[in-house]
Length: 270
Image (cartoon, rainbow, N blue to C red; front, top):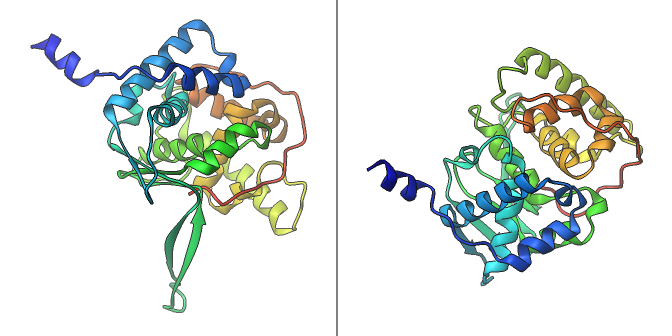
């Protein structure tokens, strides 16, 4: 019975070998993983392929290579956290390009409800699907120096939401004090918001991070995986805590080498 249970809940599909290798080639940070981490990434990718249902929107056919690329990038953030961090949802919806979402905001002061349409490169529902633009993901992979990856960004929202709702504070390991996390992230977020409010084009990181605390965490996560040295130069305390979180609570030190962040581009991530 125990053996059957393990087989049932640890099913895997073999990833597309060429797609898996190609993603590693274009992302230097992935190429730096050691042999054990690479093997774990392949295993998690296979489990993701077996565990999640992929659906193409607007007639898009999501083939094996596309599924492998998305699964591989989705599993990257949880390599040291554990695959169970990706539980609680099953569907991945892939659009050919940016997709439109209807937004609404209820102004409590006036009682007026504002509605508008927004074009997105990705969106994550707390207990629902992961929604992606394939065109934008391909752009992320072809231009890694832009320091954007829509899959990593949306998976960060998924991890964040495991604390009860995406608010920039994911469930933390015991080695990280929640109050310290809140203080560090709030100070950095407020600093970035002040820079953006001044129309400062030299914002420390992508100005989209100033949209909301949850977006700050998601953008910081992208920097952690794509250019940790830039995050460490901009917000060293945030970089240390983020590295420790994604290391599964173990102490991790971000590279402190500095560099200038690139300008933002493309439709917003959700």
